[in-house]
Structures are given as C-alpha cells and as structure tokens.
Amino acid sequence: MPTTTDAIVLHHAPNTRSTGVRVLLEELGAPHELHVIDLKAGEQQGSAHLAVNPMGKVPAIRHGAATVAEQAACYLYLADLFPAAGLAPGPTDPARGAYLRWMVFYGSCFEPAVIDRAMERDPPPRMMSAYGDYDTVLAQVVAMLTPGPWILGERFSAADVLWGSALGWTTAFKLVPEEPAIMAYLARYRARPAYQAISADDARLAAAQ
Image (cartoon, rainbow, N blue to C red; front, side, top):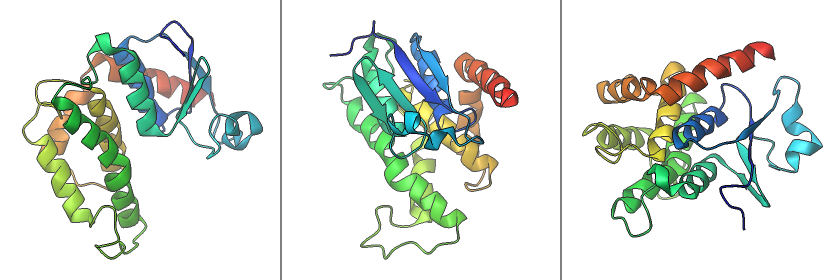
C-alpha cells in the first residue's frame, strides 16, 4: 500500500486542469515530482502517457504502486493522503457530506453544463440530464459561494482548490458570468500564496514549451 513516503509524480501540462492539482500539492506541503507533458507536441497521446491515463488527459498521478487519473479523483486521493493538512474532512466529520457533494458536482454537473452552453448544444431532456439545466447549475454554484468565505464556511479545503481553478478558467473564457459571489471568491482564492506560486511557475513552464 502506498504511503506518504513514496514518491508522488504528477503528470502535468501547464495552464490546464492539472494546474489545480499542483496548487493542491503546494497547499498540502506534499513533496512531489513533475512529469511535464507537452500538449502541443502531442505527448499526451504517446504510449508512455496513455499507460498512465488511457484517456490521454491530465492530471494523472503515480504514487508508489498506485495510479490515479481523473481530476476529482486526484484531489480526493491527495487530500486524504495528507490528513494533517486539514484539507479534507474525515469520514466521521459532518462536513464530509458537503465536501464530497461539491467535489463530485463539478465533474457530473458543472462542467457538462458549461461545455454544452459553450458548444451551443441543447441539454438532454431534464429527466435524462445529470445536471438539469445550465441556469439551475449556476444558481447552485452561486448559492454555494455566497455565505463565504469558503465552500465549507470558515474552513478552506481541497474543494476550494478544485473550484477556484475551475471558476478561474470558466470566467476567463466567459463561460460563467462574473457574479459578485464568484468574483469575490476568486479574489480570495487568488490571494493565497500557493496559487500565486504555482501560477508563476506554470507561466515559466508554458514559456519553455
């Protein structure tokens, strides 16, 4: 069974969904190595990367004998691996329910709704749709963020790294409106030292490709 002393290797491409995982590792204070993927060169479709994530996507993690792909899975795995950092409510913590809900809501509801809207695709019939409709999803996100300062109230968690990263790119691309609650949340997230350090280093990595 992998332990925190085993090397963590993050398969990463700068300025992608894996950037948030870098921020999480920084927040956790977790020693790790980067395996940088050049998307423009098509390295994500090479046999070496497909052996880690057959979908040809980032992020993906190798940790000892374990391999973890899919964005939310990486967040959940890492936050649970370092419980002393306090970024994941434990199994007996009542906050675990809300934490898991919002970790899963991102991939099952938010991103599908946003991509359908961006592609100008009609959502499936409501009874068949995992997310209902875009407006409902957006209203849920605003309601989640309005009390503040973080998703779990006063407690910053790995869910905030996931959502801070996601709302950053979706507002930048005008896929999500700049609602006051969203922008105030983003300002708090972007003020964190971990976000600032990784943003600067990701810019360096991107410039080198």
